[in-house]
Image 1 (tube, rainbow, N blue to C red):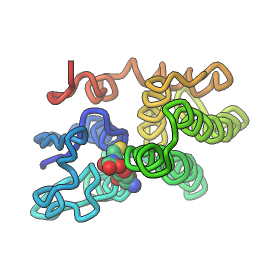
Image 2 (cartoon, rainbow, N blue to C red):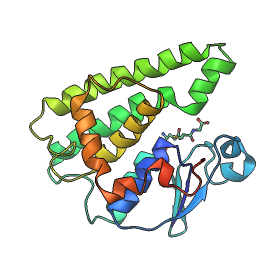
Image 3 (tube, protein in one colour):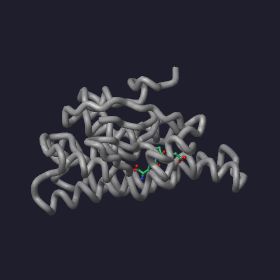
Length: 213
Ligand SMILES: N[C@@H](CCC(=O)N[C@@H](CS)C(=O)NCC(=O)O)C(=O)O
């Protein structure tokens, strides 16, 4: 397997955690987002959208981190990243989508760059935008986690799964942009529980070969 990613990419971070949880090895193929390598012709041959991650497995190339997670779950079912009951699977997927479809896209690198370069937003306004969408998403996520008896040590029960591996990179990013996490004690507690697991700590941005010093 080969994983095209970038150390600080939260979408690639999700896939790294999933691979670790499933005990799968992938050769890392770093794509430098700082230099715009992802927008170049070479990488667009891997992913025409010019985004990371992309996973190559068995001669196939997969893009979109959530599609990759679902692929890994179906191709390598053990240990599972989704619960068994259909109702519970829907709950976990809702937590996943809140992060991956609602929170992450509006705070993506190209969106932030567009705000600054094309719309003339100051760094201060850009940060306000970033923190607004983190707060909006995390408030909902906190309520969904804190008010549901199915939340355990992790987002769903006492085993880490698909929702946790989306949550942790989003918390990492929020900290990077100095968002106030005090209003989200359940999120912070689950993030801390994940950090104790090797699958998560080995996937952390700073532990990656392309991490900038
Ligand atoms: N929905 C996509 C998002 C992928 C994505 O936006 N990745 C970011 C890094 S986290 C990226 O490549 N950004 C480059 C850019 O915005 O120019 C996924 O989940 O894979």
